[in-house]
Length: 454
Ligand SMILES: Cc1cc2nc3c(=O)[nH]c(=O)nc-3n(C[C@H](O)[C@H](O)[C@H](O)COP(=O)(O)OP(=O)(O)OC[C@H]3O[C@@H](n4cnc5c(N)ncnc54)[C@H](O)[C@@H]3O)c2cc1C
Image (tube, rainbow, N blue to C red; front, side, top):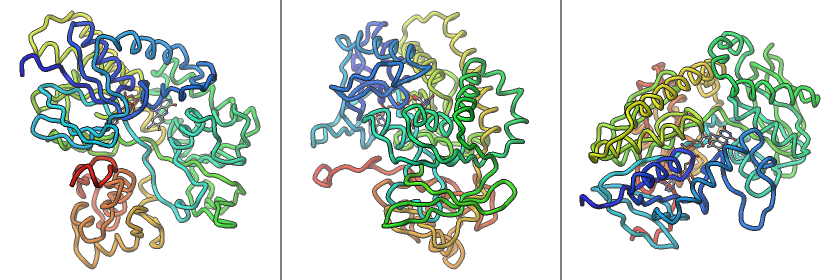
């Protein structure tokens, strides 16, 4: 047990840096990632045989991407790297990993969870039509495969990714019908003093918006989605209300939408880390201190999996969590360096607060979701059926509402519909979001073949 190597789950910015720190200290961590290559979401590598240069793939972040990839490639000989391996369960000191169609157990003594984040969505009528994608999905199509989701696209939602993905598509030569932001312009203006603390990150965001505007792309603030309509079973129009409340229509053959990110917290849940509600990010998050230590001995959290803070914070947090693990194993660590890492994390979290204020989660859209909207696409549960679970059946919290309605019980296990379902339930019960709770994590955390579990 003493000699058992530490395990890192995720090889994005957080996991890569954690692995490098552990390797530098002479430990040979096991690094597990379901992706075929390291890099995570932001620094996702192109498949073998694709030859697009770093500048085309990662824009402003090209140098960072190259540095992270090269650092990871440099330690491959001194770590036990297991790509294409999904951790689908975690209990009693063992990970259950799916690799090559078979499940294997990986016992651990210490584990750093760095599973990142996913898109946060709010369903609207028509969101399940062919041609409607999440922002992250749209970006992956472009970044990974070099494919566009359509030829005339509306991007809708809120958050920095909205503008970034629109800009990436515009740069790739795709026609952008509009960028529609639910955040009112006044929220951005109010958040400006905090945003300015973001330095070059904020400057890159401003540049992105300016580049969209100078290409003649319409950007609208304070909008509300109405519905996507179809022609020949494919999305053909997005209807929305502008800031003045007037309904507008935009012809398009694809929509990319998303409202910020949600942390991937199921593994933390299975590791029995307690959760608390974060009023800034408007979601329940696993508890950890600034070093990444959780209340569960031997379990550490790094990166967006413990709360959305972006790629730079994920790298710093990954190194800090690895140093915490080393300290807890009795290794000497460089205390001034540790203090510098923690200062950097505090600085970034200040900027994050301003971002959340500038691009608030529009809970009112979920509250007003028309009854006929499909809320849970896996189980085909509408918002109206879900509200019935709250009203007629008396479900006062989200797990009860799930049991009564099957919302969140399908393949995605509530990863996609959970945040919106909580907002719908809170509005139906006239309760604050934190009072309706959160969907409990269940294995398998992502879909796996039945043959693996029976
Ligand atoms: C779709 C998407 C696109 C994004 N694009 C951008 C962008 O262009 N620019 C930007 O600044 N920020 C972007 N972000 C945010 C940015 O990716 C994160 O802030 C940053 O990557 C966080 O780093 P991380 O290491 O915490 O997580 P990630 O980079 O997400 O890495 C997590 C890794 O864990 C692996 N993993 C997760 N669960 C499991 C499991 N159960 N078993 C095995 N492996 C697992 C994943 O395969 C992934 O490689 C994006 C986020 C998302 C979700």
